[in-house]
Image (cartoon, helix red, strand yellow):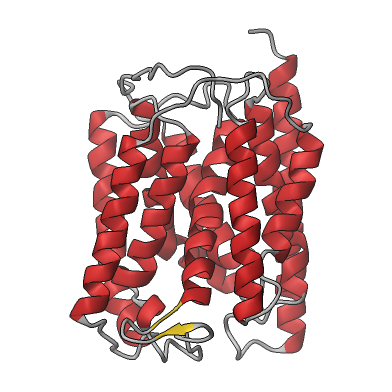
Length: 332
């Protein structure tokens, strides 16, 4: 999220794919998107990561690759991430339109007749995918490298990741939609609206142009980490229309503030990382008050899972900070 110049620097793909960061994103993305809230038995985690990693992580890697190769920045990544959120919830597992997805009714609260959608869950799903599925994995993985903003995929690597993502998405569409979704199929109107939203968000990401750099003062990284933690933890303080209004206000304020600060010449990758780490720290708290995804999990197993999830999130934050300190100490 830097606004150094209006010129777009196009980056050539590497001769060989850097598989270490690619695989890291494929592990981190499903962790923060689905598992960091706790409630899963430890024995289930490897299979879930294997199942969701190519889908969530593959999308994150491909979104980042387009943005980095074409010299675009975080606004493009965020817009593509929002498109992915609509694609996943509206077209793949179709939970956005399903009144009986597992044990949940995702058409309420704030139900919109005709299209049969809950504005509350639209904001919840899309924001969750933007932050947890895409932005956090990219920001964390880039922070571990001195060449964080360079492309990772060779030409062959792109096709491999595309194939992995496509296969994982097809399995999710056929399996999850049938099992958790009880065979639900969205209506043609719902499919059309979702396709239009994905297309518009994708086009906006491709058309986004860098703005002129400014000299605006920006908060120190620790303030941004605290703000990221508070915003992601509390942006939906309930499940009703009032909570949705609060969430929209928080999201709008965050977009405007970050958009202003990130155009400044004073903004660095450390500020971007601070926002991400603040959101990661939510995973230290939320497991202890969120309901487990698997309601058959016993209380003792749930507590152990929650403690483990919180410990992993905290370890990721500490390890990333230590890695950044090591990188800063190394000669250029």
